[in-house]
Length: 116
Image (cartoon, rainbow, N blue to C red; front, top):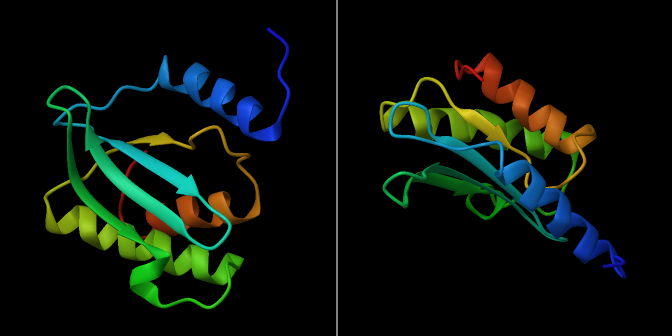
């Protein structure tokens, strides 16, 4: 099947990544979704099918999505995960390119103490 839109391309990449990345209670999946206005982060236990913790740029009251806002979100996500007792995670980029904002988010989460 030929891919027709950018959205369909992202979904195909996401399915390919999700086939390899699986979260558990001991090592949950850090799922990232990027919309036009916000970035959302969830820590998911795929074995039980539940979200353990989550945060987004909506909680930060950010006006624009920038690299600095992504760094703040990475730190906030790590704090939320630590509050739930999560130390190590598996990073799921959700089919999005691992460039400026996602890289800044991941690096900030690592600096705040999460292990990937």
